[in-house]
Image (cartoon, rainbow, N blue to C red; front, side, top):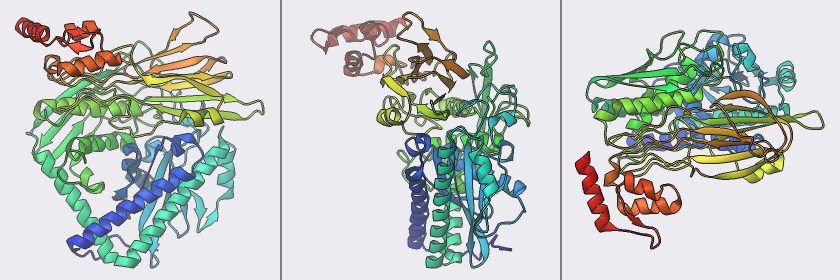
Length: 595
C-alpha cells in the first residue's frame, strides 16, 4: 500500500485558497448534518452531541463541523490510537473502523469514533471521521457511569476494530454490539448513521481532489493550517510573558462525598507559545471521575484558547478551525493525576473537569486580558441518564444535557440558560421526550430561586428543569459546582451554586437534596428530579449597572427589591415600576464613600 505523506504541495492563489477552504468547511458541515439527521437517539438527533471532519495521513485536522468542541478536537487522538491498535496494521479501501478506548486516544468510551480511509488513485491520502455520544454501550449502569472501579466497567471497548474490511461487514462484531447494549437498536442505527456520514466525507474529499488536483488541495490545506497557526501565535504574543495561576475545587468524585478535588491551572506564556500546566491538581480518583489525557485534557486546553483568542464574534478575521491553531499550545498533566490517569482507571465522567479547566484558564489570564475574559460561568454540565425496563423486558434509556449560564462579560450580561465553555449541545424538545419515553417534564424555565452574580454586567441565569418518571427507573447524574460558586470579577459578585433534588407528589414533604453526581439511583413512579444549574458570576462593580437594567431584573423576578437597594444601590418604586433616580444617586454615593 502506498501512502501519500507529503504531496508536492504548491502555493495556492488567494481566490482558489478561499474556495477550497469553503469546500472543506462545507464537507464537514454536510457530514455533521447527515449524522444527526439519520440518527435515532435524541442525544445525537436532537442534542447534536457529535463532531465530524477530514484529516490528512499525519492525523492533522483539515476541517471540522461546527459541533461540540470536545468531539472534533479529539479525533486526531483517536487516529493516533487507531494507528497503534489497528487489527492488521493496514488500511484498505472499504474499511470502516470503530474506536473508543480512553487509553488509546479517545475522549471517553461513550463517544464512538467511526473512521474511513480516503484513497486517491490507489494511495491513502487521508481520513474522514466522526464521533458521537451513544445512549448505551453496555456499561455497569445504563447510559452513564460514575462510581465504577476501572475502565472495564465502562462497557464495550473498541481499539482499531474493523466493522467493515475491504467493504465486507464484520458480522461477528456487529452481533457482539447488538448483544451487549441495553439500547441495541438505537446503538446500531446510530453507528450506521456515523458510517454514512464518514463515507460521504470520503466521497466529497475525493471529489475535491478530482476537481482541483492533489497538489493544489493539500497545498491549500497546508496554507490554511499555517495561517491558523500564525494567527494563534500572533494573539498569544499579545499576552505579556509570565506565569498565571488559578485554582478551584470540584465537589467530590462520586463516591467520597467529604473529599473535594483541587483543580490548579498555571498558564505559562512565552513569546508566541503557551503551556497549560495542571500540576497541583488532584490525584486520579477511584471512580470514573478522571479525564483521558490525549482525547479530553489536551482538547479542552485547545478549545479554551480558541475561545479566548479567535472568537468569531469578536475577531476582525475569521480563522479556520484546523490543526494549526493547536500547534502553539502545550499541555502538561502529571501521570496519575485526575487529568492524566494511569490505566486501568475509569475515565468516563470527564466533562465537568474539562469545563472547569477552561474556566480557570480564563480566570488566570483575567488580570492581563480584562477586555477578553468573562466572569465565572457555570462551567460544569448536567448530564443525566434516565432508564427503566418496559413490560416487554426491553430497556428504555434517555440521555439529557441541561443548560448552564455564562459569566458577565466586558460589554454585556452573561447569556442565560445555555451550554457554556466546552459544551455546545442543543436541548431536547419536550414533545419528543413524551412521545418516546415514559417521562414528563413538569418544569423547564429560567432559575428564579437564587440571583445571578451581581455586577455592572450580571452573570447569566441558569436553568431549572424538573423531570418526572412514570415508572420505576434508574437515574445517573453527572454534574458539578454545588459547593464552589462561579466567581465574580473586577468588583462583580460571585454567582450561585447548583442544586439537585428528588421529590414525589405522592409523598408531600419528602425532599431529598442530592449530591452533584450519583450513579444508578433507583427511583419510584412519579419521582421528580429537579436540577438547578449554577448562575454565572458578575463582571464589574454593581454600582455601575444602569438602574433601568436593575429594575428590569426585579420585574423579571431575577433580583429582589432588597438586593436592588443593598447590592446595586438602586431605589425602586415597584408600584409605579420606576426608578427613583435622586434617591438612587444619593444611595450609590453613600455606598461608594463607605467602600
